[in-house]
Length: 434
Image 1 (cartoon, rainbow, N blue to C red):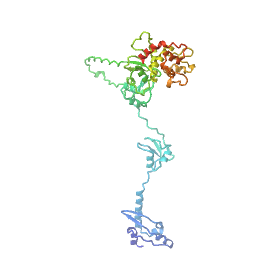
Image 2: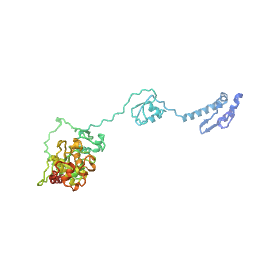
Image 3: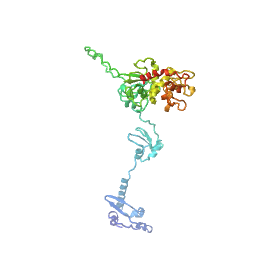
Image 4: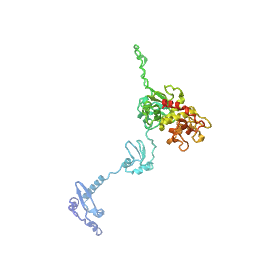
């Protein structure tokens, strides 16, 4: 082949046959060499025979060099070598394990395995990861959270709620909940310490040197502040074990919501024994019989007796017991214990109703819990001793019985006629407390 013919192989797209230089090569060298030129990019597809020494030597040097160079340019454009992975890598903001692995041509699984991580593990800025097996990594710790601004602390007392505490400090309820890791349904207890965010621990004072102060005439004393408006009329009540806000509200004849509002409570708030609640709109207190004088023949209750009577009334209201049923309970408690929560009595009798542990009524601790003892006396569908002891509501026809008959059915007393003398007083107590 002359030079003109050889040039046509690469520039004119004309297939040519290469001359055989030896008999053993003739057959293989008869293969066609297709050359395709697209624009300025050349794709050279050589059959295996072209790579043989004899065939390569017969090609024109300049033409072959140019063609192979073009093919190499195509290969360099098609393949971009990965950046060599360093032994370790320090994480920056926005990194993820998969992105780091892809950057250095590594598999995500291998990076996770080398660093003892799982697919759910988090990496943080500043953390050092191994990218090469055997690399040494200095232990790193997650960045410490910013130190919270100093805030005053408050110790919870009986009757507190988060909303009430927040109002006291002039901050939002949500901020107090958030600062203490609480939710709206969380319960706080007396003695618990809460942090109050957004309140300065102490005022900042500006100190001026004495020499820089110019004396001035004494300013007139400010007018005294007006006296605070008196609190809305109402009563107060000391919470006892077993009380609920709704039962207290019914006993005082006011709405549950009014008590919640007056005491900074919500429907989810918990009240504790010993806490004092303000009862708006009530004219009596939970520890007195009110302003109305007891009529002739009626026994007045002292503060402690009135508190016990109030508990019995509250339990009765909660259970839906009629006024007559509550009168029977009050008369019974007055006869059995003089309306006192006794830890002693005849044989092993204890509590307001002198119920006996040996007769299956319960433990001493249960029977000296006033609300529990009242529930046992009333009985019925919510009887704590259902199937063991019988209460007033478990007796058929009790509504048509006299006070003494109905009380005797529950108490089985050695003095069955003693309850009747307390009926008038019990009706008066109910009218004042219930």
